[in-house]
Image (cartoon, rainbow, N blue to C red; front, side, top):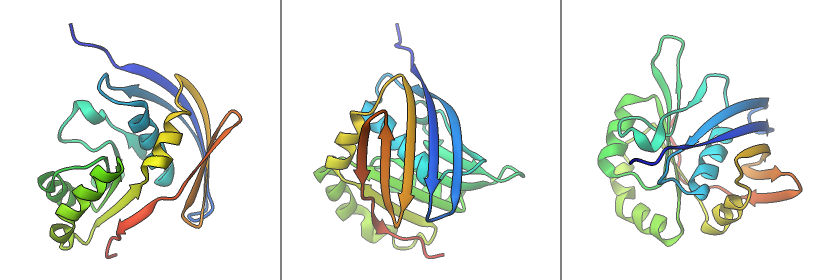
Length: 182
C-alpha cells in the first residue's frame, strides 16, 4: 500500500525589505513520503524568497512536469518556475522554455557543487535562469525548525535570510551561482 503525504499547516509571515513585500501566507503543505524535512523547509524558504499573492506550491515531487512552486499570470501563462535540488539539464532546458523566469534552489553540500560544475557551462544560454545555492550547514539548521504546525517569520534584507520559529532562529546566506540576464 502506498504511503500518503503528511499534511503541514504553515503560517508564513514574510518581511522582504529587498522587494518591499510584507505579507502573511497561510499554507497547507503536503509533504511527499519521500520528501525530507530539509527539503520541505527549503521549499518554504524558496516560497518566502519569491512570495507573491499569485505564488503557489504545486504537487511537487509527485508530478514530473511541474516545478515545486510556480506563479502564473492572470491569463495562465507561467511567469515563474521554482525548482529545488539538482535537476537534470533536460529538465532545466524544458522549464526555461515553459516559463518567463526559472529559479533553481540547489542544496546538498558537495553534491550540489559537483552538479553545478557539471552543468554550469551548458546553462549559460538560458537568460531566464537563476541558480541559488543554500549551504548544507544552513539547510541542516533549517531542518530542525520543521513541525506539523508552524508559524514561521522570514525576514529578508540585503540577500540575507532570517527564519524564526518559536524561540529558534536560523540565518541563511543564499549564494547566487547564476543570475538571470534580465
